[in-house]
Length: 439
Image 1 (cartoon, helix red, strand yellow):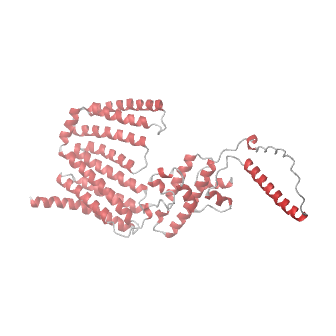
Image 2 (cartoon, one colour):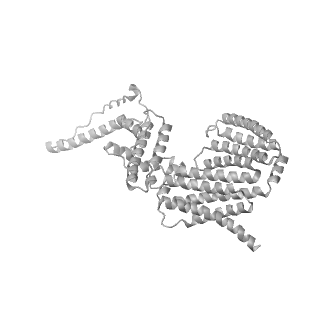
Image 3 (cartoon, one colour):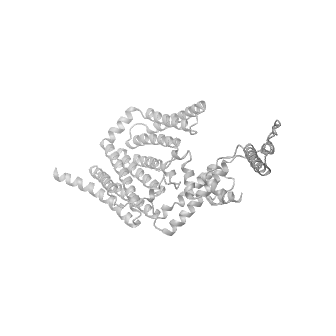
């Protein structure tokens, strides 16, 4: 029991915690002590490796401890005595042998009979709940700690391993799931940087062509500098860096597209929508959460477009969307209870909420108001959409380039990423000027 309490201490949770709490604690500690986060410091990386081995061993031991059946009652634990052997018929008298030969043969026969009876008794008394010994159990019975390779093999042989996402597979130090952050790239990331420059050049060309205000340029550059600073402070391309990158990309792209489509009000609404979608794209969100966010994003898109262009009654569209969303949520939950499916709880309700909200906002806005809003926005809607696509594509390409070059040096990566986005925006502006000269 002392070893189990020690496992709880290593995972930093209270004894008696549930299986879900143990899994959450293991994921958090595996992420904090991942050796790839300390690639710039050999001493800290070695310490993190030792710490991660302890965390894996404690996690596996707790899983093994919780998987064991509860102790049965005393009556069930008492093994049933084997029935007494039936009386054998009297054997025929054997021919007389010499004393030496008879003693030798008789002793062998007696030993063989005793071994067979002992083995049969042990087999009958063996409890049915005893499990097959794994590599980890054999090493534990011999007084040795399970090696990292055996722990990894037990994790890989788990039936849940093929269903894990790539981010979850990195938590298991197996030879079949190598962490992406530990790869050593020998060549300069020309491909991602080329895509990033082309994407930002497209955005710069659109902003110059549509005579966008200066705050849009400032917003793009500020977001790029902020994300590069986050990557430099983190020291590696962790999930938090990806979250910051996609949230910033969605917010900036949504604000520009919304402003081009319907002014400041639409830009602010679409910025929130883009930030939420970016957060979903960078995390392992559950399906019901995705359905709810998509429902809210659809309503906010239509209502923000109508409010920004001044076409139709956007308040009516919002009220009808909320009402229909509640009806769809109720119908979805009722259907889920009636079917009694084994899927995620609340998924049918979230899908019903999305369908109802979309149908409500379209019905409340009306086809005439939407047509008028799109006519007022005109070609600026297309410009804004392409500018948002260019920003998001450029951010993702810069993220890949930064992930490959961060091991070389943090400051070097910061300068490289900032120069990439700045050069792409300048190139787009320069292309617009050159096209005027040719015309």
